[in-house]
Length: 240
Image (cartoon, rainbow, N blue to C red; front, side, top):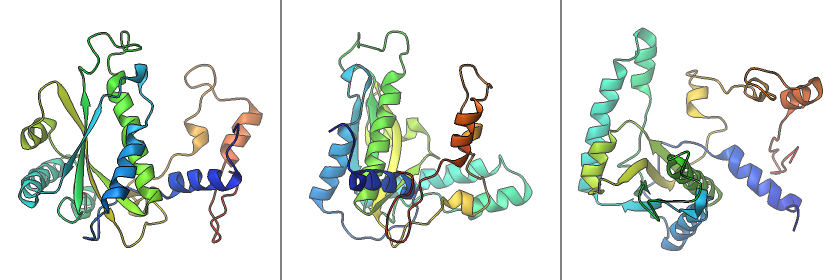
């Protein structure tokens, strides 16, 4: 099959467009078979040299999550000092994690020794194992969205403390701490955009041609400026 059917393409683009970083969850249990499908999607991510450096730690124990949440809260307050005035107040008003709300948390790690020390494609750029693990995280996120499950990435924590909490060995790097669960709804736009924190950059501003800072030719630039795939009320994806 050289090209997906229009229905398959709609499903792919819809998952991408409707993926959100979620913070509020319902307590409903995620069925084991659904969680397994999501983790299988993550495990089928592309990886440099087929190194597959990821592991997934499922965290459900309430007391353990309370310890992690307390650490995140202290880091949240410490991070607030980076902002001033109204910006600081707005930051403190954001709900930045759902560690105790979500039925499960998932820590995605990168084993930096897997299939080593010599791994195809990693000699010149050692961090390709990290990049590969991020591909697995994105797969997980998109598969979860397709299943109607929200995922939130909790980034305000110290990796060393997370390693301590979850007994992760030194050669393994914790890359992402995710909250996952069913949600009441997925917002149309990212929360930080709706709140006026930051806006999405236009595609035409982030694409260069040949050299850094060089704009593409007028034909491509116009296409970049007008590029869109929007989902109408019938869930049809225009431009896909």
